[in-house]
Image 1 (tube, helix red, strand yellow):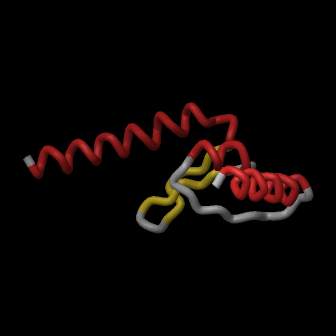
Image 2: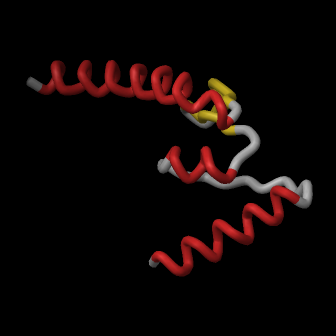
Length: 79
C-alpha cells in the first residue's frame, strides 16, 4: 500500500545516506533509480551490466531494447 511504500522508501534512503549497503531486487526500475547508488542488471543469474541512477535513460534504452528484441523473437517463433 502507499503508506508502507513510503515508510520503506524513507528507511532505505536513510540507510543509504548512512553508508549502508542495501541489496534490493525489483522489476520496477523507477524505484531502484530513486533509491540506489548503483544498479546491477542480472541476466541468467550473472551481472551483465551496471549503471548509476543518473544513467537511467541509457539503462532503459539498453535493457528494454534487448528485452523487446527477445520478446519479439519469441512471439515470431510462436506465430
